[in-house]
Image: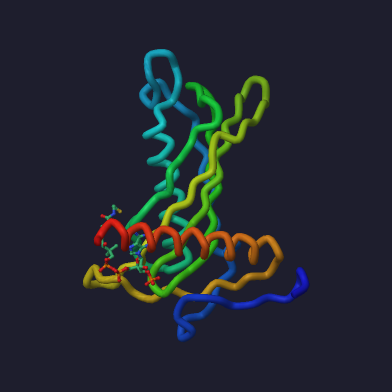
Amino acid sequence: MTEQSSDIRGGDSRLPPKRSSESQVELSQQMMPSDANPLGNVHGGHIMKLIDEAGALAAMRHARRPVVTITMDSVSFLSPVRVGHLLTLRASVNWVGKTSLEVGVRVEAEDPITGEITHTNSAYAVYVALDDAGKPCSVPPLILETDADRRRWTDAEERQKIRLERAKKKKT
Ligand SMILES: CC(C)(COP(=O)(O)OP(=O)(O)OC[C@H]1O[C@@H](n2cnc3c(N)ncnc32)[C@H](O)[C@@H]1OP(=O)(O)O)[C@@H](O)C(=O)NCCC(=O)NCCS
């Protein structure tokens, strides 16, 4: 398939399909002393909260429904984030199931004095869209336009398969 042609996958075919670019979220926030330990390193938990917020917003924009986080993959922090740094989170929908969506979030930290930008981490979280009764409800299909979209879909589909197998094993 060529870079230009698009295909539509997952979701409920009765709902209008959407591109991941339509729900992408970019959040930027300067890190404050209240976000950090006494040495000035930002708490991992604070960054995880921001990842979940950015991811949930992208999922809500795709579904146009409230969502809850059902799972978040393990997160590793590749470099420290310091008080004063500008943290930028970019979230985009990689994959949609019937009621669930996987969102990838890339986190970068910028030192506003030197301009140096470091990749802090990337994370994947799965959200479930809810109807008015708080039950899982269908989400729109995802339009894949580029080879990168299709690669992200394939990787996300594989991760979701592994998550569901793990969850099944835990139950038994
Ligand atoms: C999310 C919730 C409503 C799902 O209810 P449920 O009856 O278990 O729903 P289902 O078993 O039908 O699963 C719903 C979707 O989640 C997916 N899912 C279930 N367990 C999963 C897991 N461990 N990892 C990834 N996806 C999972 C299912 O595959 C299904 O996706 P699909 O419809 O696209 O195929 C319910 O588990 C819940 O309320 N959890 C608490 C959420 C929460 O409080 N989060 C923190 C605050 S936001």
